[in-house]
Image (tube, rainbow, N blue to C red):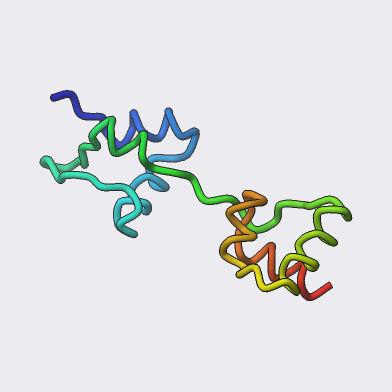
Length: 96
């Protein structure tokens, strides 16, 4: 079975090696310790999903839709997933 190193994963995700290590330490990316490095299964990397960042800008129409859906009872987590933004961004638009 072929494994990926943290450097390989960093290149694939376009992040630093330190960021990959932080993802492993936060249990967001499964890995196995091998000597001084961590090894990641390609299947685990495929399952990994980057979280959207909190400073994503939504259009005014999207912001209005978020507020309307929230009033109708949609939870912020569902809205964040639907609009592919962080929950923090959802709350920011709800408090406008």
